[in-house]
Length: 125
Image 1 (cartoon, helix red, strand yellow):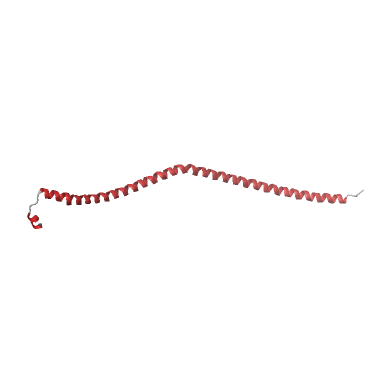
Image 2: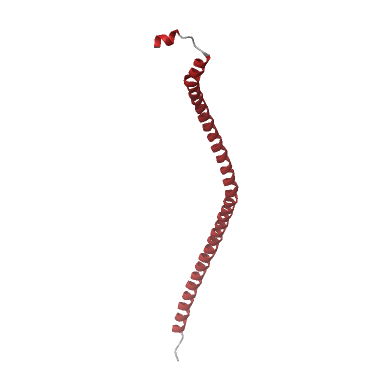
């Protein structure tokens, strides 16, 4: 039977049938594979571009939101530094006042001792 088919001339119907059953599915598969490869590459490039743009936007927005916070933080730090300096000056002044008072107390104690000694020397009646 195969020998009979080999001697039989090809018809348009045979070629059409072969094309539909063999060639078109094979070509379709090859096209699908090529399209899948290209789509994967395009998808990968698109994802990279989207991620890059998203990162840029996020960084920009984050910087925009954080900038005033950083400025306020710097201002607060400066205020704290000024307060610390003021407290240091006050503390120094207090220490100086205490030292002066201690000196005055010592002088007064010496004066009291002198006066007590003078009182003892006075003749009693």
